[in-house]
Image 1 (tube, rainbow, N blue to C red):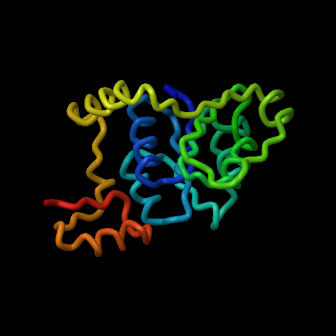
Image 2: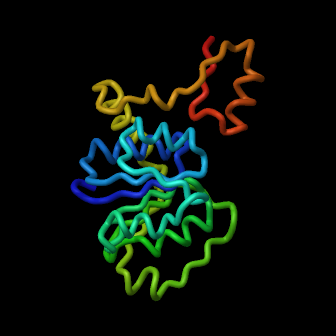
Image 3: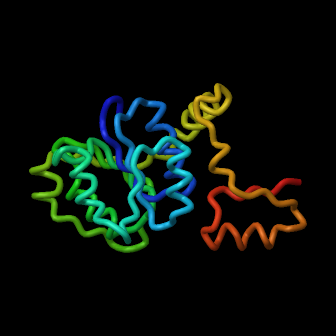
Length: 181
């Protein structure tokens, strides 16, 4: 990621972490995209250099413009939106990496020849068996304060107000909603 352009699709909690870690890893440009303006603003606080709401402007055009027509070197798909994932190949740089973190609920349809083979795309998913190592890395990032997650914690509720907390979380008005005992 160092010195490269990164697009983060979906600015929920996982996408916000992806933005923050991309910043730590030295990404030159971090382009965050979401249809929720509040989450886009949080992404700015986490380190995104560019924000794109695909309902207001073409994400493909914006990414290609920001990368001089080359496309992004890395795309982190954290929304689980199949259409966003399918479209991501149109702004992935040749030889670029696509990290699939979001879990699509629909069948993903990709034309392998132009989108993967001819583009030399590298696609990665998640492998849960390394979760202990992931926790160690996360603990280091948090305890060293390299990754500040304060902007992601948008709401705090007492246990007695758990219904309000769930309403906020389900509505998408917040990012990380905490219940405090």
